[in-house]
Amino acid sequence: MSNSPLLVFDFDGVIIDGMEEYWWAARQASIRLIGPAAEAALPVELPALFRSSRPWVHHGWEMVLLAAELMDAESPLRRLGAPQDSADYLRRTERLLEARGWQPAVLQEALEQVRREAVAKDRTSWLALHRPFPGVVDRLRRFQSEGVAWSVLTTKGRAFAAELLDALDLQPALLHGHEDGSKPEVLLQLRAVRRLRGFIEDRRATLEAVHRTPGLDDLPCYLVSWGYLKPQDRHGLPDGVHWLEPELFASPLASWP
Image (cartoon, rainbow, N blue to C red; front, side, top):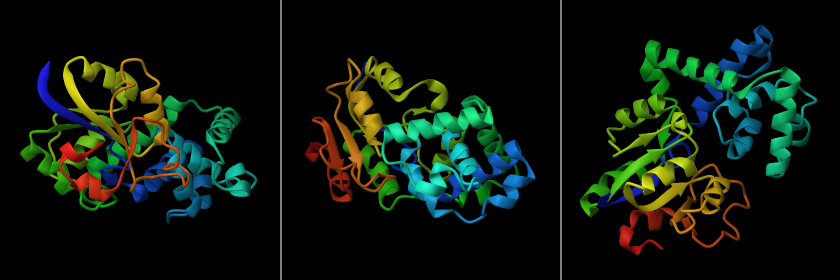
């Protein structure tokens, strides 16, 4: 087991703001799955309803489903707005999958094919759809001077996260994508070989799932204030999940709770 501490970071919503790319890629994938009707119905510009629903998204394929839902004027998203709670979001997701006869794996592959082609044909334009959150890149580089290694654990495809990290000249000690398993699974594997100092996320439900996992219940977890959050996410955090403001993030790791 390595003695050096390892901080594990989520990627989208923590290191990178890719909202423009999420919509672009989800729209393109929907067009491929549905056809010309989707191209005519879905706006090129990022819709406010897509942005407000993004905090509920866990896996990339769900963004393709959200785009398809925006085509239907009678859909819950168009009639009622963003989901009210996790159960509401799950119900909507299941109903739309059933109505269209889609499988998550098919949606994920469509999304990743759009991205693979974009990287191959015009990598510069694809990269330009992403922005690092202010101060995060510099802070990641400073961890090395503190003797702290950091890694990335994301539900994004590993290859696409690697492209973005390379463009930012960032070299994590490890990089895990959705291909490597769920976040609790990967964290358990890491904990068997590394001394984990913490896990940093912008999705509260993921942090709560980590804390419910035997063997991870004492892992320090941090919910970033700058990510894709629901309005109520910061309130009533469970023990062991800490609110991470930019000021605390910039401070020495030894001062973190």
